[in-house]
Length: 249
Ligand SMILES: NC(=O)c1ccc[n+]([C@@H]2O[C@H](COP(=O)([O-])OP(=O)(O)OC[C@H]3O[C@@H](n4cnc5c(N)ncnc54)[C@H](O)[C@@H]3O)[C@@H](O)[C@H]2O)c1
Image 1 (cartoon, protein in one colour):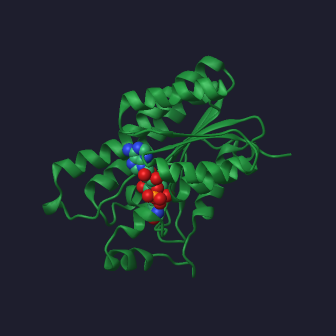
Image 2 (cartoon, protein in one colour):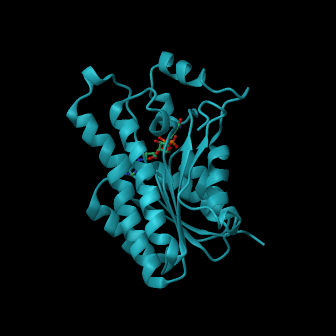
């Protein structure tokens, strides 16, 4: 029996590395999937691959750092699926800059893409899940940077630490209604966001991984899937590290 039969899911940044892999796994497990992102071409490419699995698949251009666009995203989910069972807040940006070169513009850009976006989406999803009274699942993508403060930029680390606080607060508020909220906090994995870093930063980050292979999008997507199924049904409020031993906390 597919583990997400009859479920509908929204995956933000569903055209990117972790997001597209998660969309494929969700569809393989029977879910209808709405992916959103900012690039229509890559969205359509991923939509085609996911739709080929045989379940309803919708792609929508949406900048999740904008409240009004997030409202439209959830209205589209209402129209297309009539319900939202699972939300994966995966969209995110990173920048590598030391504090003395860290502009206010970059601070706001990262906070809005990584944290405001998750807040807007969680609020829309929670309202629908509470009204429907059939529970639900939210998975927020954090980062090793939010756990350790290590590397890249203050805005990235702060936004990803914020993801953990948001997750635990909502998990507490929503648990009595059977809505589970968890965070997945990956270590360095060579996707687009990672390949934007200078080579020496990439090598430094990869050097922290203790297992003798790099992580993959499938490693992360499988954890998101597990948390979204019945198998993860007694887990809430957790921020789960997945990093090949780069940080053990
Ligand atoms: N790859 C890593 O090493 C790593 C490690 C820890 C955490 N993460 C986090 O994992 C998540 C997914 O990243 P990825 O590695 O798959 O990179 P990615 O760049 O392939 O995917 C990120 C996606 O989010 C989209 N996005 C960014 N801002 C958006 C916005 N405002 N509105 C809509 N879409 C937006 C991007 O266009 C892209 O499709 C991100 O939140 C990232 O911070 C990645």
